[in-house]
Amino acid sequence: MDMYKKLNEDPKYKKLQDKYRALDFIDEESYKKIHTKHLVPLNIVIDSDLFELEIQKYHGDFTYWGIGREKNEGRIRHGLGLTDLNEPLPFDPPSNPITTPLDKWMYKYPDYPLFDADFSKINSYFKGLNSLEEYLKLFYNYHMRSCILWWNGGHGFVPHIDTDVPAPQIRLWGTNDPEHYVFNFWNGKEYVREENIERGRLYLCDTSIMHEAHSTAKNVYTFFFSLHPDSYDLVKEHIL
Ligand SMILES: [Fe+2]
Image (tube, rainbow, N blue to C red; front, top):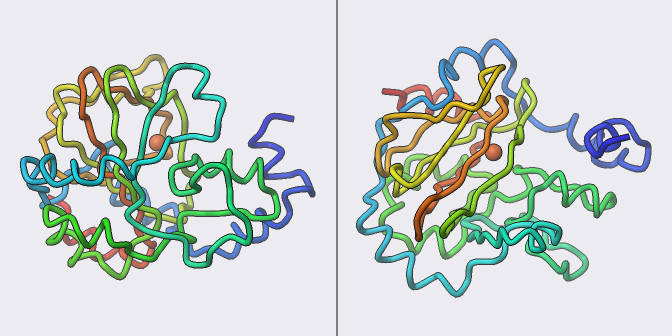
């Protein structure tokens, strides 16, 4: 059985399966109504000049993104959690869960399944970034697992899907450097690069479609925000 089949079906992962079913979801019709393309622009733009300056003071706090295997493949990517776990774990994990792909986390720790909804405490990094302040004020109460990803050179993500539909979160996405951020979605035959991405603009991102991404320069950041399904109407109001 592959990892996903095991996570979904193996009784070893019953805790995860039960916890997933108890999450709040956006139903399929509502999901499709707002995800009209891969990246739907919102009327929110982050001041990327300011962001690039102020994120530097946190560079030392970024943690390796992943759970081990990728390290051997030379893809040492980093992330900074902007939200913290609602409940601390009863053990000290070797990798920071906020910067670990959660499917891999749950595969390794069947007794401690974590979903985006488990990370909804806005932390001091989020509050300390003035470039994110206006955005944060708008969606303050709806945040779930949210991060900044930091890529240098060829860093990125291999092809994957983040969510099933109905979806237990709304995912917002953006970057400071669209020219050097290659973001590809699978169209059924091949990967096609997203065009006309604006620097700093936030987009509603359809992560139910297979996608991959990588950077072609240093200091390419991703704004990676997960919102609770209750933010649906508010997100809709901000679609351009
Ligand atoms: Fe993704």
